[in-house]
Image (cartoon, rainbow, N blue to C red; front, top):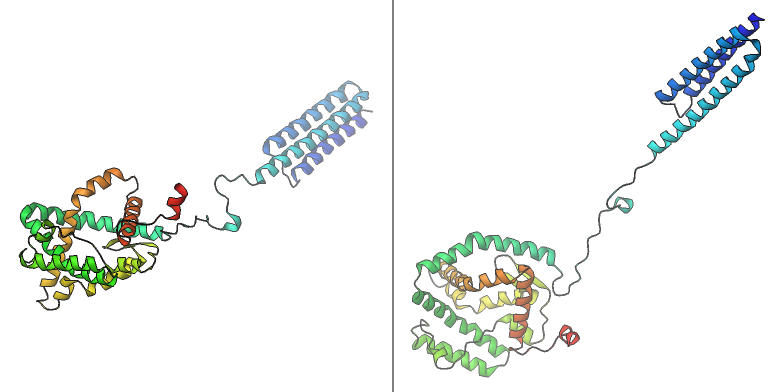
Length: 326
């Protein structure tokens, strides 16, 4: 009888050992913690079986139930381990933008009709600002500091007088014969009585200065301004005005005269005119910096409004936007 009990105990011990081995070879391998628990359960089962063998033979059924409980706990541990592994293998949620098929973010298109090239224009505007801050502005400030005000005024009058030549040409092209006569008279009076334009006598006698260029002439004859354009070094413009600048050179006395003098004189005169023009903008620049939240947008809108006003001689028709606002 004792031999039978010992045989049963050995069989239960081997059965627990085999179940434990099968659990460790499962695809969802148990963690070290569950393996330790199974080993402890098998040891406890063996101890219980030994105690039963020394007490009474009828406790064999209890040992059998203990082994069944051990098998049940082993299966539960295996299922728990499999669930844990499946959770670890599940893809984590991704925070941030999710791209379709790995495509990059779609940037918004610039649909503004007056400024469809805004990204490029802003870069050129930033470049011009840097050049102005480090070159043109310091030179203009030095010019105002070195040159006395009367001489500065005289230089400005000379260039303004020379500008009446292309103004006259464009007035004729626009069939504004009265304005052409006024600009011609201004040039003759200032070139003679004004000592080659040093003194603006014409303005003192009521001959008003007018600004006309080929960009305005094309606009007068119905050519659209086209998209807004920022030119390197030259600043704000439009596609129409950029083409007009090329034609303006053909009637610019300073540019034409540079071919009939020493090679170094033309750049000096042209540089002086550019410096004088930049110096005249120093006063308004402070107001611009203080008033504009977006300097690029402010300059663009101001330029387009001014050019539209000049094309229509200060009385532009209402645009669609103005009509909608009314």
